[in-house]
Image (cartoon, rainbow, N blue to C red; front, side):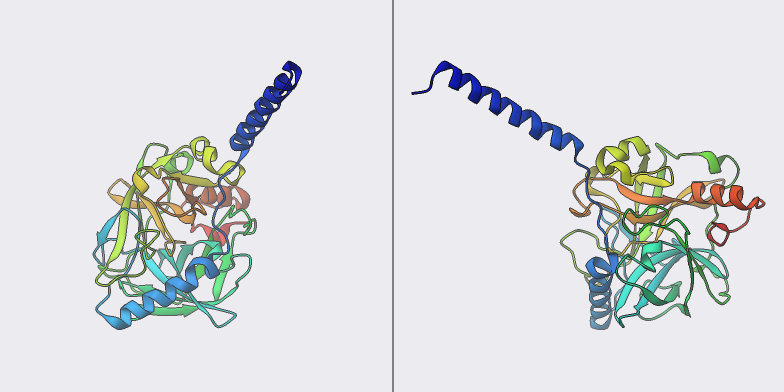
Length: 310
């Protein structure tokens, strides 16, 4: 039999535990997926290659999106990555000119795994065959890139000149008023070579995929990811389970402006819980990177982004 004091003490302790538990939940930040190559890129590369060998395969995996025929996103460039371990991984990138492409820094170095070279794949839905294929080891990561937070997750790829065609074309970069826009509320298109769902492997007869995503404010994104979200981050809503997924890393997020596709983000991170949990997708904000590069080097407008960044 408990005394009144004992009951009061027990109630107080229960209340304190509840308060502490709620406080812990409020302070918790969603973890982002790290160490891309071993967790995503290498197994994705193996599945894609197996599917391409098995059938007529056309490749990519945006979650909640639709197939995109070759040439719909002529600036989307596939990356087949050779790691220093000898392993093979995959990413995406965006063509900026005949000799430059932009990707995520974690595609080159993810904190554990270092790439030795990229094979860029232009104008093809297949990653392991077809299209124009160019190998390079000339990659410049952002000087302030952090593999532990994926801040400043951008890198410039240099390669020998590739001619333009209907299926191979550079994307425009932000200029003018777009350099200072946060794009919140705007609808943008992501395209890539990643999975179509958390459970999906690489299935047969699939094309490059794309999806329309609405840009959200960094404040809204920080409610999920906390301090991972910095001014150079851009996020899109995960409503309806739509977003980027494993294998999409480094690929483009673009808006339409003045009749042109304008690159505003480089696919960077998502929740460690998976792609379909309804959390935002994270991108490196191209407009911020370009503006900061111009300020740092006093560069004229129209100069390509990453080769200029400090």
